Length: 122
Image (cartoon, rainbow, N blue to C red; front, side, top):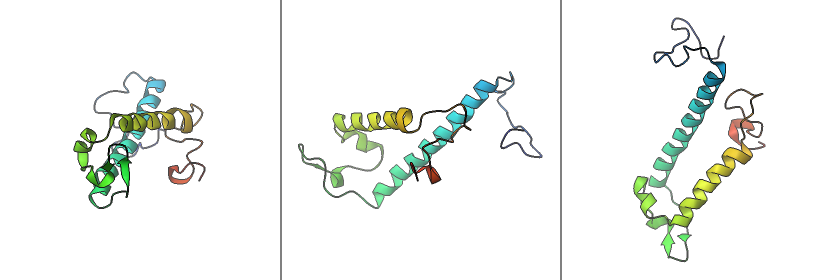
């Protein structure tokens, strides 16, 4: 009766992760899978979009680092100042714990503040 179970495969679990029947662990894995999928989609956008568009102005005015000077892909990590990386990590943590907290009364990935298509209060 779980979402996604359909004929002819039925409940597909080739690695046997749900053999023990632990509903709490199953729900946790489902929520984690949804979260990883969403992060992957954003990461793909973050990798593709800078190839075609960049913000105007400076990423770090004090060091003279313009957005146009930051390379695409993983090499951008070496150019962004440590304070900028810290801000990104803190922002992700605040979104995770503040804006979209986990609620056991709702389905995995269904957040109260999510709104339409994940736009907060949309």
